[in-house]
Length: 129
Image (cartoon, rainbow, N blue to C red; front, side, top):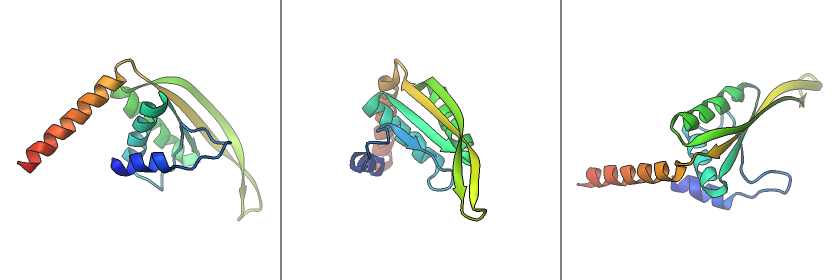
């Protein structure tokens, strides 16, 4: 978790990209990396935008459902579109599906996160004894 916090704090963001956007890939990082990163973004910005293209759309939906089912997030907006991506092998643009899901904190987000942190500390204390 410290790695994620450090990564979020050291992230270099250009003006064209939103600070609370996570562009999800289904090949680069494990699912729960994105779940935990989304939790951190919600703590910092009160909402998070999950974005994906093509085959990674299922991963974004899964992340959103995990956060919603755990009572941490509510859907604010879902947008779908297609984007033209240049395919080097074919030499012509290919259309890819795109999804953007904006999630906001639930009313009891902070309480649930505090309880989870407390549970983790208790488990670590038991492991050391």
